[in-house]
Length: 395
Image 1: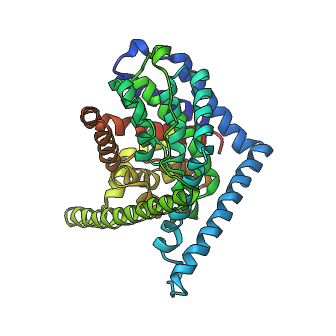
Image 2: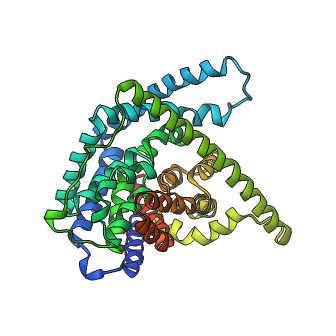
Image 3: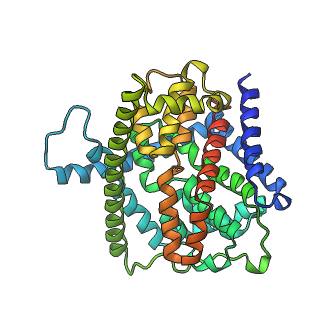
């Protein structure tokens, strides 16, 4: 029954994307089929095979060891400051972003990450038929934040039509930055966070390819990674990475203060009108039908829908913090499905971040992103539903 519901959810998502399509005659059905098959194989391999489980455990161990190293730096600057029972979120989670951003900056300076991203992107381009720039950007978006991923392809922006711009923007919104994956793993089960990375990459490309299909002549299909880093030495890369990580940590912390406070305000207003009702409950009922199709048990679908809705209207950190308190109260299936759904940047604030980044690169194209901003969020949300549904088939 769960498999049938999952298939129905996938069909519903693809039909909605089809209805939103800008040019249905250009949709590459073969490429979309290949990417869905890749998602199914990846999820089966990671969840259902001994080798896959070993790989997940190995990657988790690497992240845990890096978190230990990061904690050594955090402990040093805290200097024995007393912390409340259960820790302090800013110290225990957000400050780790600094260390992860430093590592990414060094790997970029050494040209290790750019080469991996280029060849993985090239492989995806060959098997799916997508242009190289879009494929490169999709892989790049797994490692870097929304702004950084788009800036990395700034030299190719003059090639991007409105549809191609939609695809690269959708990849940026539908993914997460590797610099904050460690923070996610401090809150939610690592195996589901990790499987969400490749699933969301493919889902963003699938939905965007249906909504904004493209055909690019080979002569225009090029990727340039020659200027991905402006650092002159490894020490400069470390310093710039640390500063960038610090900014990300402060931005996330600032947004959490604003969004959580705003959520409390909205709930106070709602409860003044309807006693005992919260925004999360309203969102839970709105998203309950699709949550049920995704595989969430009927008894848990309202709570889960509320968490997913919270993520869309605020951000993934706010939703993860709320969901963390429910981990021992809901089924493993719900934990996996909701975790995969939450592991992306698909929320309202991302529209402004992406539009602002593109505006800084190309003013005219920044205006185009603003015009299709809501469609971008809808597409990214459909991608999150697709990823979570596929994960649910194997949990």
